[in-house]
Each structure stands twice: as C-alpha cells, then as structure tokens.
Amino acid sequence: MTEQRPILIVEDEPKLAALLASYLHAAHHETRHLSNGLDVVPFVKKEPPALILLDLGLPGRDGLDICRDLRTFTNIPLIMITARAEEIDRLLGLELGADDYICKPFSPREVVARIKAILRRTGAPVPEAGTAIPGLILDTDAFRATLDGHDLSLTPVEFRLLKVLATAPGRVFSRSQLLDHLHDDNRAVTDRTVDAHVKNVRQKLETARPGAENLIHSIYGVGYRMEAPEAP
Ligand code: CA
Image (cartoon, rainbow, N blue to C red; front, side):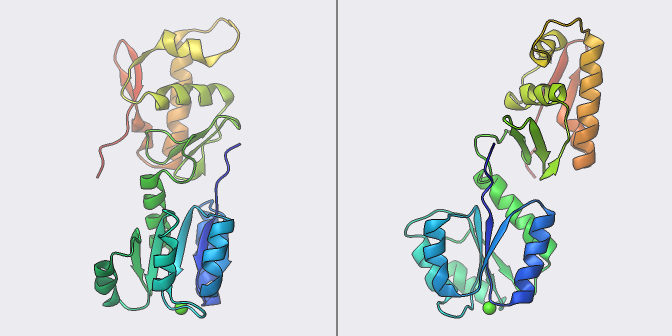
C-alpha cells in the first residue's frame, strides 16, 4: 500500500489553519498543523511531510528564517504564505527556495489547486505509483486508481486495463494485446469485451475529471492508446 505523506500547515491563526485543513481533507490529503515557528524544523526532520504551507509571520520563529533552515537539509515542496502582497517581490529576490508564494487573504480552493500543481510537478505524493498521465495515480497493491485525488472505483479488470495503457503512454495496444493483460485465466473473452471495459474506464475517468474520457484514444481498426493532454 502506498503511503501518502501529510501536508504540514504552519499557521498561527487557528481559524485559517482549520479552513485550510478542511479543504485539504476534502481533496483527500492528510494534514498536520503547527502554530509555533520553533516547532517546524524538528517536526520536519522527524516526520517529513509531502509539502509545507508556511506562514511568514509566526510566533517563536520567523517564516523566512525557517525556510532558510529547511532548505539546508530538505527539498520538500514549500509554499510561503504572506499577509502582504508587496512582500512577495522581496521574497522572490531573496531566493529562499520556496516553490510558490500565496498572499492573504487567499481562496482555500486556490491554495489546494496550487498544492496539487506542485505535487504533480515534483511527483511527490506517490512516485512509484504515479503515471505519465498527470493527476493519475495507480496503487497496484490496492488495485486502486485515483484521478486528481478522486477514487475511480475500478473493477480489477478495469484497473489492469488502465494500468497497461497508462504505463506506456502513446503506445498503441491492440485489443488482443490488452486481452492478454486482463484476465489471469484463459477465459473465453472477445474483442467486444475489451471495448466494454474501455467504455467503463472512460466513463469513470470522465466522472473524476470532465474531459478525461479523451485520455484514452481509439485507433480505428487497431486498438487503444492513452495519452497525456498537452501541457497548458
Ligand atoms: Ca501569522
């Protein structure tokens, strides 16, 4: 089972921390929360999170100082949160090694979107289960696939099908090649069976992310191929 590390929220305003946590939980992220700046470095050394949301103004120790210290020993993705927009220019100039900056007041939805983008870029959440299709994660032990954090609820056969396609993006698989991967036994299955499974997988992808059914292309007279969309 793939372990997904939590996101560390360092924020001394309890309401804001709770709001961020609730949005992150809704997006299937676990969270940890610290409010004192002095606790951050020891915590990260002991329990490295997937990403750190770091408020700049903290009791105990300043966010800038913490960021510098963190970068001496870890590349964990880090988002700095500041209450002053004009401060961002100065922060950028300091080259602190933060991956992103967010200004208060922020929309929690926006913060979650930025976190997802950074985790995707750095491949942080589950590298060994990640695929070349952005946002798609396959957990082979659990036969579980998620797209943008949404569980696709695939049957074992659908999972195998998606796995074959997703681990070789751009490659065209014939129906009979796909059939070889679908069942452990030699049950009598036909090409039509493959089409039916593909249809179901497409529907489930589409439910998780509108437009995602198009990640699987039909190649007329040949079979199927999966392809990541063009980067925006
Ligand atoms: Ca603060």
